[in-house]
Image (cartoon, rainbow, N blue to C red; front, side, top):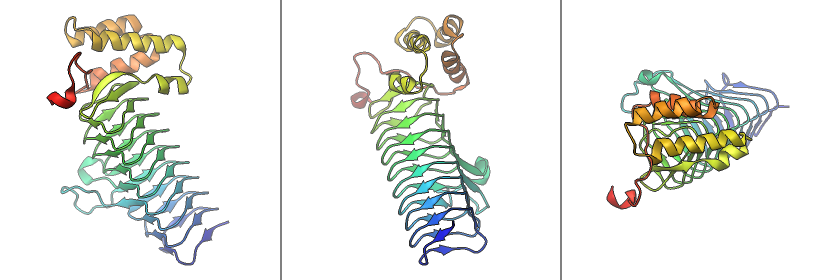
Length: 270
């Protein structure tokens, strides 16, 4: 049964699904669509051309669908689309897209956004992604499925984060991150593979070993050109789907992140 607190303000043209709960002092704009079974706990602001999937919970002071923070935005009816069964905690902000960036910002299903996180314009966030407190991503960023972004980390604009990557807290990520990669240090560098994430996804032991060997051959070895190392890894371990994803990602990336140089602290030398 639909339950709207009398203090909430819901535009007449907003589309509200069944069994939705809208708590005290929420504000819902005229071009908003909220799926069945969603809950807006209290003091939530949803505006713009925003769609929220079934079963999503939004906590107080979240602001969704506001215009993009871009000087190139021209006021068009760009969109924000959020998937099903997401948890969006206090003071989370998500912007719609820009006309020149595809016109849409998307968030997948079953994502978890802790307090203070931000999804900028034209970003595309996959399924089962976790943003820890105050993690923020700039415009046009792509985040693969099952990624984890640590607290207070920053992903700069137009960066791609591959499937199941983990970004440590307080890292500033300025280059593309391979699938299953683990990123560490304030000036972000690859520091290995995300073993925890792979085990949580029940990826097989042989596949995990193949990813570890592929990482070693790609980033710990300094033999030959990087393109040649990619080809060798593809030939030796490419039969594993997880390694094939890493190879495809690296071949498509214009600026892949590299590993921390041995004996060198990037936080000091940068």
